[in-house]
Image 1 (cartoon, rainbow, N blue to C red):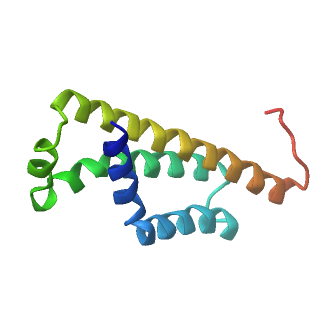
Image 2: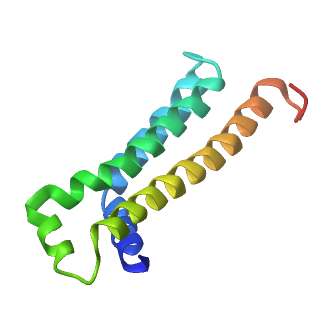
Image 3: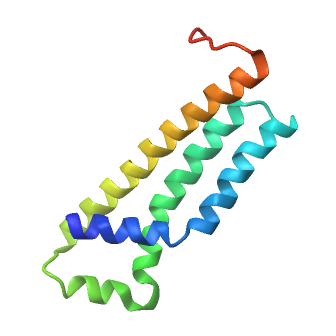
Length: 116
């Protein structure tokens, strides 16, 4: 399982240009005033879930799934690793989104408020 998670992490890191562009979009729209800062939370959450799910497509590209199944990994472990990968992506995306929301709220109002 650890090896599968590591493989998924490396495949996500290989897509760093796409991730940087998506994060740039997430921060530029609220800073330009096109949308409110709440857009960032939903956008980053959706993008992080999509990135986690995209690792399945990376495995099927170039017959990668055939190579994975030759390893001492069964399909149950493969599916479990995909669930864990998606959960890690979503949780980390939510944490980044909450921090971004707090910073954008502070920029708009000039103070931090934990009451909504």
